[in-house]
Image (cartoon, rainbow, N blue to C red; front, side, top):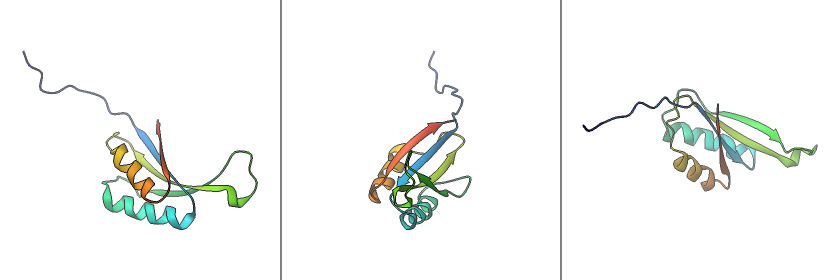
Amino acid sequence: MRVTSVFRPSTPMRHLLVLPDRETAEEVAEEAGQRFVLDDDPQVVREALAGEDDAEDAQWLVVLEDPDGELNARALRELAEEYDGWLETESE
């Protein structure tokens, strides 16, 4: 007997594209909306580095909610790297 499909429950994911500045993050958020099928618009969020009070030490995040765990992490990583950033992924 051959099984053609296996039921796997989806795992909700949150992808964080970490970028150096706000302008870049806004550009990446727009690009992500064009490249990927998203349920919600990407959020641009400022995150201060742990222990740093200086605004210059802030990172900017583009937050992509992936409730079905279907976004391609490799493609997201490549997008972040095109803009001198990186990808972090969290399961919910």
